[in-house]
Length: 458
Image (cartoon, rainbow, N blue to C red):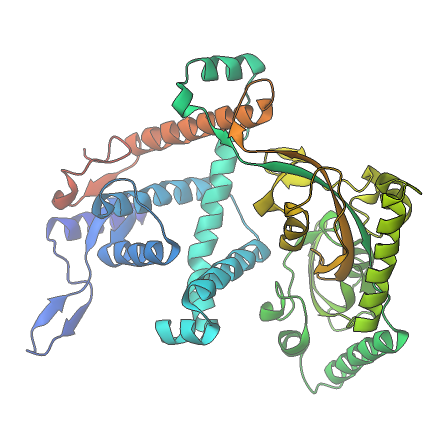
């Protein structure tokens, strides 16, 4: 069947322009609105695909290498190669990853255009329609990224490799290391009134009663009331997830559910309070939907936490105890209290205590930006990565101003540069080799293009 598809598309290419879609203009003459311009394997690239990517690039501020009329169809062709290999290697991505990518893109689009209403007006579509149209492209994008990670996962470099690479670089080519800081924090979580906790639990009990009586569905209530933005739009569905990636209390209940028709008891996690419904189990993974409700923290409780942190800061400045002891003994932040309050920056290249300012939570970055090394900020409140209101004081442990990288002071930075260079070289070689073994047919208009990869024109 695929062989027949290739032959059919080749026939279409030899008779271009192709009237894949036609419309009647004001003079009642049919106008060409789409055509096949490339074929990669048994996949066609249409002119409309190129224009859609051009528009997306404009929205995202993409700068193409060389002539966009050549670079865009080539980029689409490269994507086809990766997606074909991802299918062969059974590369999969989760719905949670896709949804997260879509939400990031939508938030960026909103920040550019001004509001959700303006975004809907611009596209002449509802937010649901926009999300649905983005879904397939994000699924492909995630698969491509996973395929690329798979291809370069075994690349490593030695210290000698790093030294040789930079010994041959001109001074102008040595990377600039932005200002980096190390930050310690002490956090206090404002106490939530019991009345507020009771109110949230009563809401969740009411949801369970309504579902059990058949008045509504779990999915409907999740869309309406769940405070988990990553899942509420999917009716609360998490997608198949392993135990280790879930909050322990949540996982203990989710993995013990056996009847999809029953709703769990109320579960308290570090994110808030939940009710959970089983969808399916598959090996060591479970797919559930949930509704999350978060108790509201009163301003009085916030003010008390800020006042306590102000007293703690005064005691540290007066020398009654150190910041490190305060972080270990007093702080509520479980991610830092066992490390003297020192924040950790987890990146794709590993774990470090050094942050560029833009990589810190914005509230912390503002608090420490004007501090000298060793100074402690005034107390401030913020929303942590779990969506909870916390109060914090921050200490600037170290600060290294931006500078040209040196092998003695910035070895990890320089190593990352070499690793990334080898990864890009590996991916480039893979694409060139893949082109050699893949059927490619390119419209004659592109034969004078200066492509990034060799071998398209055969």
